[in-house]
Amino acid sequence: DAKTTQPPSMDCAEGRAANLPCNHSTISGNEYVYWYRQIHSQGPQYIIHGLKNNETNEMASLIITEDRKSSTLILPHATLRDTAVYYCIVRPFYGQNFVFGPGTRLSVLP
Amino acid sequence: GAVVSQHPSWVICKSGTSVKIECRSLDFQATTMFWYRQFPKQSLMLMATSNEGSKATYEQGVEKDKFLINHASLTLSTLTVTSAHPEDSSFYICSAESGTGNTEAFFGQGTRLTVV
Image (cartoon, rainbow over the protein chains, first blue to last red):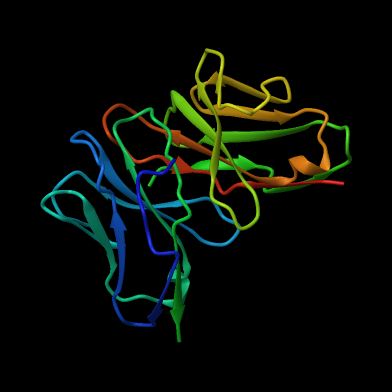
């Protein structure tokens, strides 16, 4: 079973920031938080991951709470192409598979 | 980022025939590859873990004699669906990892299998 919980769906206006929450209250000290997204009929695309510090790359920012029990993925300026299912996954280390939950279906509206 | 390529992207086969799906890591060596299956409106479910040079480890409920996995090199893993039936119709996705440490995994684009 997935160790994360996410809202099943969210809407966001085009050009606005999309903030996707994830709860992982049972996360262990050695587990990282990963975010992937899946656009219809494609394989999952890596977005970002982190351990305890906030992370930012060209796609998104990841904000992890100090107690690490939750995190937020931020897409700063959502576009229509960001419409996808977003998965938040915790994983301890290399070589372990990813356990996918149902994710959050983000719809970016014009 | 690194590239993982699956082939074919889609395939239609007759019931009772076998289908081979290839997963290649194009610009890195992958000691571990994972195979997932995704049914419509559902999330990805792990089928098996494939390590180069050794037998694959299958998840509970996945028939190893039906879903043959070969990981003969550091850049190629194959999944063969033997004696396919309509209920095997699904979206099959592989992922590969490039090295030690907590790196990200890269996913193939998926293969849509339709058994008629």
